[in-house]
Amino acid sequence: MIRKPEYVFARDAEWAALSRFVESEAPNTRLGVVSGRRRQGKTFLLNALVEAVGGFYFAASEDTETEGLRRFGEALAFHTGGGGRYQFDNWDQAVDRLYATVPDGIVVIDEFPYLTKASPVLPSLFQRALDPGGIARRSNTKILLCGSAMSVMGGLLAGDAPLRGRASLELIVSPMDYLTAARFWGCDSEHELAVLLHSIVGGTPAYRHEFIYSDAPSSLAEFDDWVIRAVLNPVVPLFREARYLLAEETEIRDPALYHAVLGAIATGHNTRGGIAGYLGRPSTHIGHPLTVLEDSRLIHREQDAFKPGKFTYRITEPLITFYESVMRRTWSFLERGLAGQAWEVSRSGFLSQVVGPHFEELCREFTIANSLDLFGELPGQVSPGVVPDPSNRRSIQVDVAAVAPGEAGARPRVIALGEAKWGKVMGLRHLERLRRAGELLAVKGYDTGGMSLLCYSGAGFDAELRAASARDSRIVLIDLPRLYGRAAG
Image 1 (cartoon, rainbow, N blue to C red):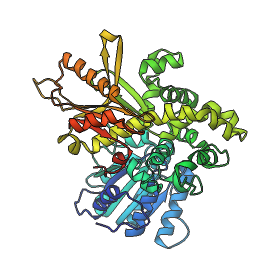
Image 2: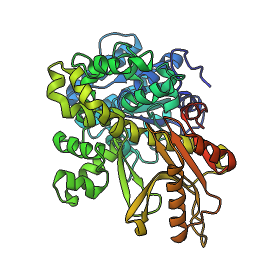
Image 3: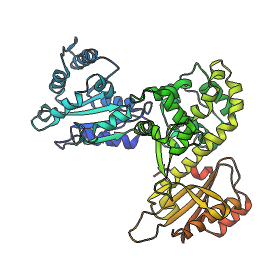
Image 4: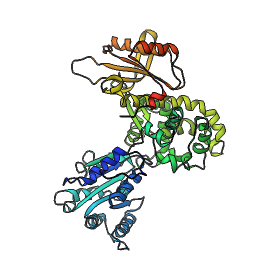
């Protein structure tokens, strides 16, 4: 494997995938597609790859076709060391010259969606080059097409797209998981601080240095001051980043509508009907915005563990949740430099509406990563679920439900039910809720015989719950040290 430079933090799996692609001697390994939302380090990673092995790197920008061809010609001429630039009348000529000029090695075309926006024919030209008898077959060149517009990049290899079936690599550079992010921010031993930070900046590496002057809170006591000076400060680039994330998606043409959809989800209206009601629109009118946000990987549709036809939506980018829940409501105060006052009135809402649900998601992530240790098997699904309790005229919200893969003719089997509380010490009443949910599921035909009961808490557990756990191995208590004490995977 190509040696990863020391300045590349983590990203071992991504580097290994790129190395296998570059070093492959298979004759059909000629095209790779690398995508991921902005700020995840794609360009940084690909630049490191080109520096390690040599090759041609071109970063596209929002140009007209003529300007794009001019810039591409200049970059290609500079790569050859000849100076000046190649003159191209169209991309047909440019693609032919690319393969002739770089007959061996790696070619990286970054922000490829910018080029296809001005020149939609480009994917078809690469298809022709890669087809039997095409110019790519007469060289050893390997092309990596990279982009941040997820809806565009996802469409490159989908359906009847020209490049479908031509790629040997489809790599999505995702945000770092919460454990890696804690190490990256230097707070892997400050667990409460790690959760609070991840609730705002998630696992996006660019936010650590470029966006906030490498400013990071050194302790939990400094967190509030850090939020005021680094996140709610109009002169710091992170301040407007959530707005830009939405504006950069090419399929989003009505930002106000999309912000309204995200605002609904961020405030707990996370079903299709709930979103429509929050917006005062028929549910049929929000189908397209939801699809675009899903394709852009800004939201995720999650199936209820116990109702196959019921889905909820959650925002995948914590900074957007923070913006919609905290910043958007106090925007006029923030723009006037009144960040201290805005945070004072928003902090409790941040803990309940942002950190609480985010902690639940971290608990589900932990459960997936550690399911073999927890249960000795892999669940088919780990998600939230709602269990109706008709006799008490209520529903029980289960934060973490692990359900076994379905087997023909067998009853659906519940592996575990879990409840997550960020700011509350958990006790027997929380355990009883899980037991009651298990009883109701058994009545509905679920197999709950060997079910575990999981209690996740950011504030700890009382003595009675600890004693119950000591008596019954199926009662599992997971606090912050355990949540952060085991490597994912």
